[in-house]
Image (cartoon, rainbow, N blue to C red):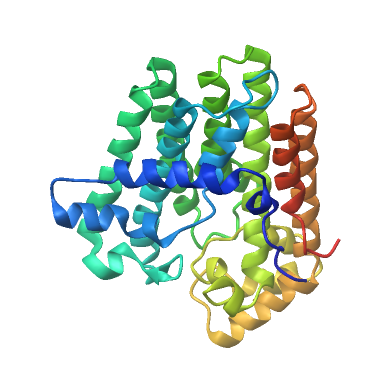
Length: 328
């Protein structure tokens, strides 16, 4: 099983110019009178990334019956979502004690946990400023989304090292920590373009289902990809006590009892290798991929509720790409 191929949005006509607009707005948003804060806030922004959330906002703004061009408001809304994402990474890396992120030293590793938390807060504040500039509906939506991200993370932490975690608990956690921000990114695109409410709702549902599929696939890759592909050892989440969907599905499979006896606490290298083998070969990966395909199908069905447009086709291509390279 291989990791996914290059993202189709990277070849989208007009994407370089769109990325340039996003990156310029991001750079302006992380400026600060304090040079240390400016350096910390821009650290992961400069490290790069696909910018999927702001691109989804931009595409959503021109999907359905929206305008043909991406407005400055759509760029602003997308950048607000990206700042929430990057700010959450500052906080996540403190929680995970991560040393790297996007191929560079993590903020917490370079400046310490306290400064990483404060710089993450700074990014969330800047995101809120941008959202407020787009009106009360967008500001309220982004604030609620930040709350959902926090709730999702707490729900995940609550089940650390617990083999009694249910699929329903997992689903609720990723709906908050991952899917909520994708749903908001797409919804903001529809709002700033004054799309009909049924189209705004369709885009919101699409973002939610895309985000759910995105996280499930990411969790599958955590147990099937190589250390070189992941930038961390395979099964990192499992070793940290985060039992994601492939693990939960494997616990219900033929090797479930042995897997349950291995989990529940820190893993030795030998136990980790055996646990990974059970998850990979005991049906956990295959069943999790079936769940991901279900979310992909629902996301594509959400897009069918919109009039056909090139932007909608691009979103559909991005959705289908989630399963590219993964054996079916």
